Length: 556
Image 1 (cartoon, rainbow, N blue to C red):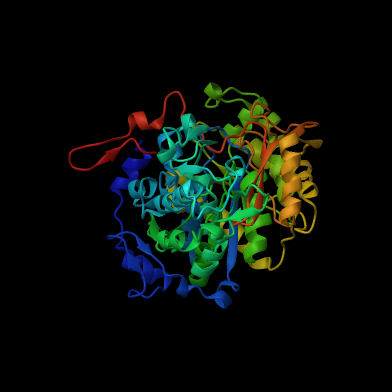
Image 2: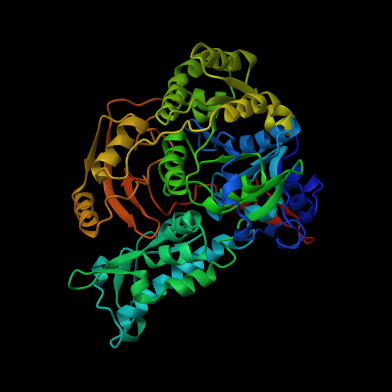
């Protein structure tokens, strides 16, 4: 059996100008990045036309550490829809180097449902994430420079500075650091730290901006901290927004690539769903809807994270409401939530599958809170038995939920044609199905508690003293009408990664809250989740290599 990278390297790619023609993009308008990648200018978005077309959101049940193939399903579904005559584009996020070199691997799909060029997409791609990193750290440098300046200093109290630095790598040693040591010429000593670039507010802003002017305004609205007199300080006070936006000049444009079957794919933005909003940019989704009858997109991790944030943040800010949803489930994950150990997931276990179904039920319920009835896509793995698959399929049918077994890794689009037929009909029949979970006008606590009790199934919410103080600050600054972007473990519906299945009667503990005034949301941090991950004991980086001819191996 070939590996993902072997399948990708054996595929024959079309020149990117041919992919642009399929979409109807003018060849002289796209900006090629080599033969197989291109940037698409924002002026090509057609606001009226995009409203006529259909948006399909792919989410999942609570995943195992390796993931359940949500991106692979999104790509396979797109290929299947094109096979049945539906003009469809997939829109995805850009992979972060953290997972690529860590435990989860790349984010370009798998098997015969991948986006190409796989190696380039998983590594530096078109440099967007690097640009986000540079823009973020420019603001960090300007802050410390202002602290140092006696003539032009704003009088910022170093103890109140909330802005950290970022890098696109899993590096736990940088979570908490001290800067400015050495002497008076080396800056003002203070505690700070690093987040991963995917958690940067700049990444969130990039994904929520509609154009350069909107980008600059949002960048200027970034809340940094307070002066010694207690006055709030924003990035615009440092005159930072212009230079930051200049660094993002290319990054704000969506990237055009292709699926392994030669269908258009747009990849843009890379916020994680457990610590950020977890979906691609507004402009990428609108661009795809401007040139395709159907658009398939995904939201990171499970419905309690990526989908919730898609609906409550992206949908409401941009007016992008899904016409259909797909819920990816696997026999492996159901066994995992039914009590099976990771090492035993390849072994048949009907009892564990049956016990794990309550996790699937909760995610179906979660989507119903938004008035959406999903189609369950059972992503088949080679170790799955027919008996196990039938248990899941019958369970969905008994609940009145549409279900389809897919084999997109092994068969590409041909492995999801039944799913494509079901989903396209659902999308066609739904014009205004969506309803939000909460109102932005509610209090910060009411919004947090609605998410925790409804989406996670929590009994109540507890706030640390620090979190309570930040809520008071949010109210004083007038940021209390912002939506909520929860940072929580992806490994459980609760904030405890050890609680599998469908936990009940638990308490969500909010240990701190971050303010993303530029992005326009509040980030409550639950449990022990970190915004700078660490590498596992055996990182994927150990098996990635390159030969003398430039051929990369070990990516997956």
